[in-house]
Length: 329
Image (tube, rainbow, N blue to C red; front, side, top):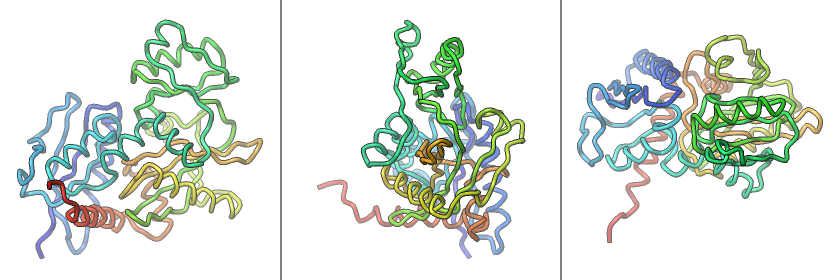
């Protein structure tokens, strides 16, 4: 049997470089363990300096006859923001996950919230400030403390802080502005955090959601990848209609940004009102041993190797459908 060659692209220039390495090794191990073998892995590593090893993807059709499909696992900036996806489009290569527009929209927390809000989805009140406003002290907010301060374009909770007073807010803004020229300040929601995996192209489906129980005040980078103390509740301790609401909102968010292939949607449930808010969408979710995207699907009966296979097939299906589109007169 001729095995399809899967180019696994990992590493990258973002603050999520190390997580990308872990995700890639998990996916590669799962592909290599498939019985019978279905795919052959071709590794493409991108260093922290942006250099490709051993060779780059060239932005021209036909330049890579050794690649049948690309599985990008570069999290964050220069990987999850539409830049890599644009390269794959220029190279005329099928690839796993969201297209250029959906990737860029989902990565920018401001634009993602605007699209969801315009689509009638519940999002937390927020304000956008620029690096210049932060540096000049012109940023002002009407929200009561606490507030969450986030770089607009980054993932894995990198650069995110919870501010309880003016001094903490000032420091949080400074830190966030180091990672992006656009910073999101959100009204703090006291409550619970949930995640929900979504998969599909035209007719996406949501998995059983899970609850994240942080070991710290909120689910930050250290809690996700360093301390290994956060607890996961799957299935979540929620009423049936709340689980259905999260699953429905996850699919609606996925559709609103035009996502395809896969994504993980994150939610907040306010303790005082029980209202559920769409928080973020991640178009290249983690695939590490502790990542919840595959774990939620595993709970639904889709084992890790089958999940990888489905995602590759979704990429190939989208590519085949795209061939019906004319790009010239």
